[in-house]
Image 1 (cartoon, rainbow, N blue to C red):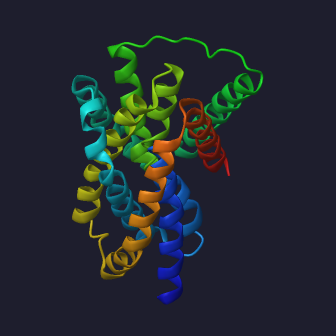
Image 2: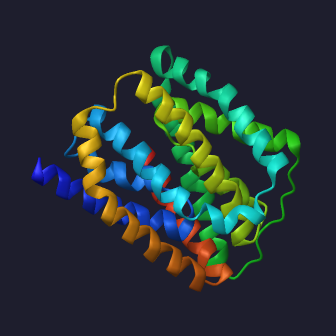
Length: 243
């Protein structure tokens, strides 16, 4: 148990730093480490609880930037997409869909990073309620398949060229709402075992420190630096879905 607790604490520190700095990617970063050491049935509740704690710590600072009509649409459509994702996970080609999203993230982030390296202006893409709803619905499907709720909203915010505070004000509350729904489902399904709760509790200090350091880095990041980090994490997220 001591070895597992140490690995959980270390992975939560790294994941919390990334989430504090970029506003998403806690689950993808932590899962890439934990799944090599901890069984999936224990990893799932640890990831959800850790993500909830890390994301909730910085929510008060973003409260004034949250666009509530857009947020309600995103969450509502994601809730509708969630059972579709669960159905695909149980009966459909979930690996094919996940791989397709991975390819999308890799191609998009690679293309945008290349434009930045070549000093080309980012393309301007407008959105609307229908597009917002589609992104929310697709995020709900991915949440049902594997808990990947943050990547598509992050990509959507980047496509539209939003300032970093506005981008985070979409990603973080959305992730918190979706992880809270997931936590309720895990609780009713009996996944919050003593082992999962002990491992999560052992990681709390590392998680808090990682989040605070990530938030400090975020405050000091220029807009372009934030965008580069966001795109790199999207690239890593896409690769992680393909391997």
